[in-house]
Length: 99
Image (tube, rainbow, N blue to C red):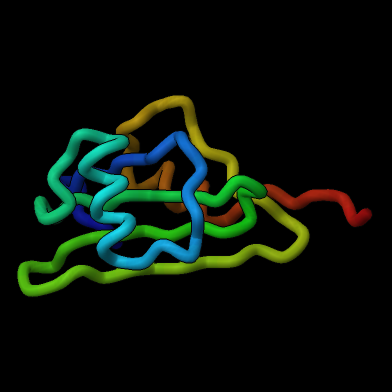
């Protein structure tokens, strides 16, 4: 469970999922104008919205959660700042029809 005191930010612009710690920290700083070392969670998705990364700093280094969906996609809210419940909803994804 994520404490309610933790801030969660969503980057609306799709990101290249080849980016890792430093690239996503730079995106948090440039795209969201937030400090990636603040302890907040930063949510990024790719253009197809089937891959998601969450970046956070835990006092001595960055951590990265990476999720890839099969036959589903992530739907981001219109807000830039969200709560833990909304993040859980995003992580579930929305099923898509098979091609």
